[in-house]
Image (cartoon, rainbow over the protein chains, first blue to last red):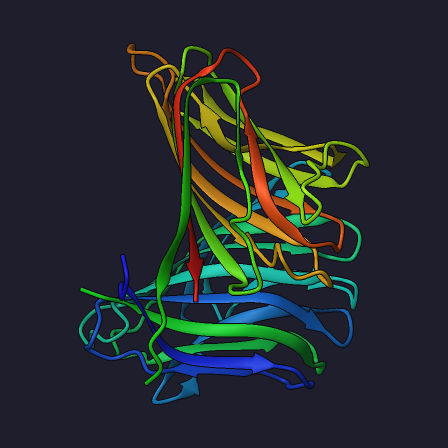
Length: 168
Length: 170
């Protein structure tokens, strides 16, 4: 339906950056969607995700996560842990790509936790893998966006990162 | 504030067919697509999906597909299925006796410098005796070429009906 997915923020990476922050989540919509596509790195590293408060990444160890790790070449695994400092989408080489979609719930509610569900697929340079699951930030506060970073001191070489609101 | 959209591109449908091609649904206008597949079939199985390139060729050789999917069976537990270097995607959607619905996201199909990636979620009903099967999957077509469509195949029996709608994520 036309007009049902409203673009809020976008960053198209064409030269190396250490991180990408998308902001603009507020009371306008109840649910927000983030897509990231064709993301490449300048060295072997892992793409990671945190929420933002007032545009600043929340780095506190308050993220609880559970997911299924799909692998085309071997047995799938589970990942589940409380009190993390971020979600980690696993490492790729410079020949790899990340793509995925994230839904954000309750981000603008100061009296509730912020949740996400996500589905992600990547080619790590050799193998095809993907993670599907969810994460919650166990602090009752307003979050206004998401922050993509790398585990190491490397850069995102290219990619598209877009934040949408789901019209209501 | 920029305005974006989930924009309808096209739909295709068939009745009493074993295969449905959705052609010219991917273009330079979008990088990411949502594909909605709704079908009913006398046989229960995975959907077998192959990509179609900009020459109209269905890619069914070359061992360029990787996939991994998890069957969430309500009655018999969960099952992992996977293949690397295969000739089609399997499990990006199911065919099922009492119907199946799939939402699949395809990433970068038309970008000739990148691979074509997919994720999906499926709900289906195998029989009338409480055999719900959900599914989650990932896949990559590992060839950097220009993909313009999909061929969706029923490996067992014909589709009683199949409806496919493709949306671009602007």
